[in-house]
Length: 66
Image (cartoon, rainbow, N blue to C red; front, side, top):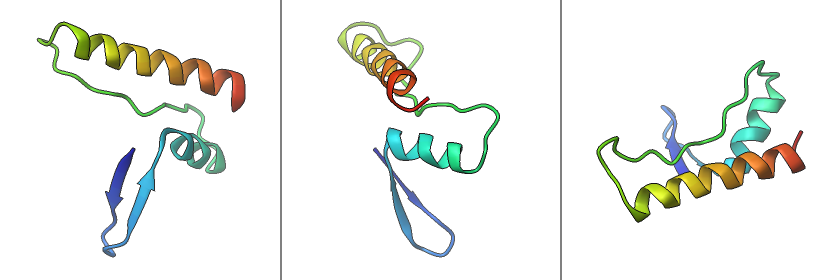
C-alpha cells in the first residue's frame, strides 16, 4: 500500500486494487500495476519476494478485474 499526499494536504491510501480501479475509471489505454521496486544490485530473498508479489498481482488482476 502507498499513501499519497495531494497538494491540498489530503491523503489517499492507494492499494494495488484501488490503483487498477482508478485506471479503469479514467479509461486508461494502458493499465499498470503498482510495482515492488528493489535495487538492481540486490540478490536473494528480497528479490524473490518482490517477483512473487508482482506475479501474484498480475495473475490476480487478470483473473478478477479484467
